[in-house]
Length: 325
Image (tube, rainbow, N blue to C red; front, side, top):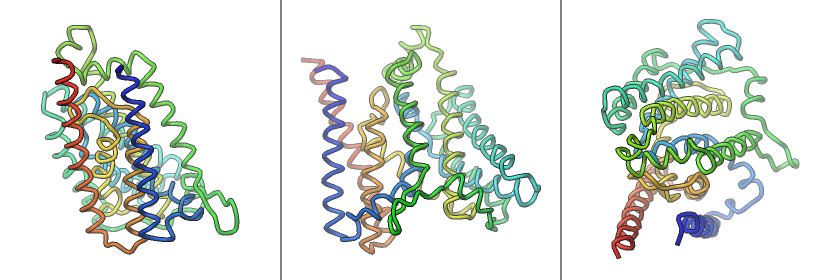
């Protein structure tokens, strides 16, 4: 069986699992399987979905980024302070915030590639550092009261009827998902990303600029996390360092691994990552509608991550046995 056909079979299985999840959640809460809820879900899905597009590249190369939620917090604070404290126009403040996110990701990539420190250790440190910096800069105080035009641009509601509302940022996500899928599956860059994940040493001997690829991926992760932060601030109309992006890394990594991206690198697709995050958000949204506490929702997410990692390792060993035979 070719890799492409295996991935297609896996994605069909994920689509089936998503269907089962929807059915189970609708049994837990009658409000889940309604047009109003399903069309409002993009406001909860788009932020982790966007980050998953970039996280997929990182995990396929054998890396990871635990700092994405903290980058979101830092970007949210930078946006709020640039607008309210420095008096910058909101479009310019948004550009500044996006640059902060890109630079934070670039710093992660520079430390990983230049100092040779594993991504897990680097991003674990910056996970604490960026969140602490955000809290320190804001002194723990939220910035709110953003103009309606800002909220309308970044978190625009589309009224399909008097009671049914969806969100325009879903179309931004779809466009970026298509771009990410084409880059990973149909370009030289994508082939190099897979090569790095399969065997970094062999990729270097083949002339692949491994450090540049990794540097670009972590900078992209920072920029995408910044975009997600701006959308989150517009959605809740508040920039607060200790709430924006909390638990985001857990959701995104769980979604990617559940979607078939090998945690050790070398395998996975954008469609799988998207389906994985959709399953995670369907589970968390369904539990929330059923009145389950946030602590239990986080526990379920953690258990899903453990199950996904175990399944990934079992699948990897199965492929090794097939090759050996």
